[in-house]
Length: 417
Image (cartoon, rainbow, N blue to C red):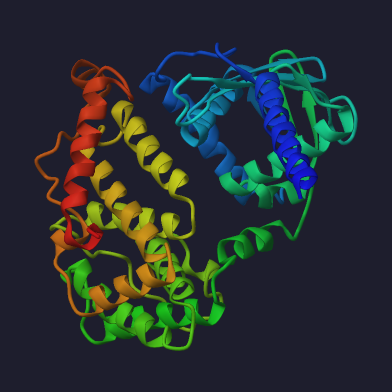
């Protein structure tokens, strides 16, 4: 027994030493990439243009053509996404048939403030492109392992951003010093893939039922003057009834997918292609405003489908774009987006939360249960007005306003434990 005890102690010690050795190899004290605390709102607007173009690309990938992305825009967008998802910084450069990248990620909850520095290069001259080099801290990975790890990371990235359906029509890429070119070929199945991606995780029969209930409610007199909360009561009552022998999370996701599509005035035929009748145009209001209801439901649908990052990004991008055109930057709309994101995440967070939301909404709610008062928040700010009051996205003044929005949402009874 004493020998066994010594052996186990030795194995534990070796395990601890191995972990310490790996940590020493991969962790650093100084980030390789440090691009400052925040992007300016003009830089974010540039990232918006690229990501919006990517979204449009997904819808038109069946057409044979080439999409060209400037190196600066690609670098900006990659850094933005790394900031949003993993609180790090990234840098990307393009040269002939080569993509070099560096990423610095702070280790969470580390009192010594270590960072994970990742550098690598992609050889884009072959088909398919291959990872030429991948280094994590002081540890250089073998090419085969680096390629597999990078392929896994790329698939996760595409799935997270929703770009994956368009890759079916991607025929190749070309890298030069200044541009990345994506070459798309004809793929008649691409539109179907996009539609199927929207339906992933959703029950087609459930989508049809919630779609048809919208039509039925309009036949019963629900219309433009009917507040959003009154629409939600019978819809979530149906979700609650169906959840007696079905997954309540799946029911809520299907319901919010229909509502988000309807509120954003997208074509409901993508979800329910064979319906004989369609709901009339969305005109419902939340806190007396149609734009609040639209922001709320669109963000709720994205969050319910586990796209809360995209939900926040779309809301922010829309407001940044409006500083230079449209109605201007509005924290009121951001509040509606954030409340919708909280609602969608709660409605699809767990079986218990999904049932609780169903019970609560089906029994009747008021506007303040879903979204806090927001009409007093700054809105309709042009670019120069926003810069004068808040400098840029991420500034102390901006973060203070965002914290106030979160505080108000926390006070809504639906989001309290």
